[in-house]
Length: 359
Length: 187
Image 1 (cartoon, chains in turn purple, yellow):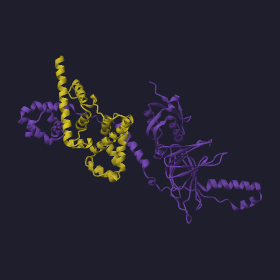
Image 2 (cartoon, rainbow over the protein chains, first blue to last red; image 1 turned 30 degrees about the vertical axis):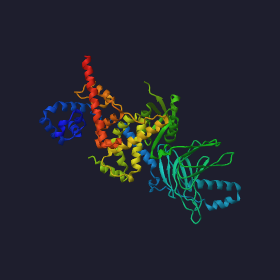
Image 3 (cartoon, rainbow over the protein chains, first blue to last red; image 1 turned 45 degrees about the horizontal axis):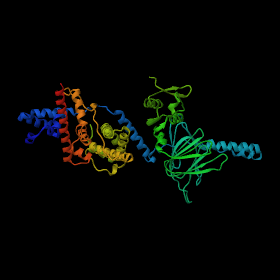
Image 4 (cartoon, rainbow over the protein chains, first blue to last red; image 1 turned 90 degrees about the vertical axis):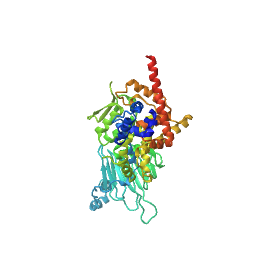
């Protein structure tokens, strides 16, 4: 205790035991300092000044400060984590409900054989039967996503308002083919080709583009006759079929996006952050300086609602953040708070109006 | 009951995501406030904090044991901000890569015995200190960290840090008494 006798005001303030005493953090030191004060009253004035200075330095820590920032950061962290996760952890116990494959009555076919017209009709009927009954089709409503386990162990996540057709069986050794309308994320497992060398291809048919892979993860968006393919890992080959031009072949590397518009004249390839395009799988949108015009497209894709901007300048404003999209009402609530705008939904016209708040 | 820092750290090392959320829940506000002070840039602060947590998550299997999480996070956040700042400064061709802590009135509690004027004087006095002095004072009195922890965070040893704080307190007193003297002379 004697060392405190040489203490000046600064020494007291800088002393951690003194700090604990004044800030009431430690009962044990309280008795020591109490004793010191009674024993050496001549130090009282210096101790008082030290206490005043220390108390003045006590921070104003408001409880609940940065609560929003904390929550937003946790959400963002978890979203980033989801995107980094290996994807094969996903549920594997769902089995698709298979529709029964009907074989076309053989007798009718024999009669039709002689007659060209009937034959044509028969062929057409056979084609339709094949299409609708030898296939499993999956459809999602607005605001809904579905995970589909394919017979080869590949997993497809189907986004809202989308349609996927998968044959009930793939011929051994033949390419594995599926047909997509809408948007889906594919996690394709590699499949060895029996006795032969090499791997069996997996092909996604969309509007005018066939996406050909061996085993990778990628996102295909096919709406309003436009196609965009985003590659997360591995390699894919795109066959872009033109109306009058020969098929163009494009190879893609991870973190690239290729967009093909319906005029088929050209395509664009660019480097992107895949999470911006695949976050819908975790039922949330990740926006990074995303123009509202893009947000409007996603709203149309996912909820089937057309967005109208009251002030056309708004469509070029941008937004950054993560918004859960499973619950439509919540999504619009968060969006309107974040952007500080008014969002009015017109149920009848399947339309939402974005307008500025009137002051 | 709050689990110990050691237990929480073990949970992280075993690959439990919740451990990270829990750490963010406890320390995010402090980290953000500190980083706003030294970086003066909200976006940069948020990015750096995300990077800190993402780093401990991805490297969780290689991390050594930690008994006190808060100073550990402060240290790696500070290192990141220094790194980003120096990158930026290089671009701007500016040599001074140091950063600045600026105090404001709202940072401190107003005690009954501390009137508003006194508080104003204190803030002025604090902002007269050097950048390093201000950062040390902030970590000591605002964050309530120990000398050992602050030394670790600022990358210096115990004695120079103690001297830094001691000198800061001395200067503070001088400024404050000079102010009161000036007031006495004026009135």
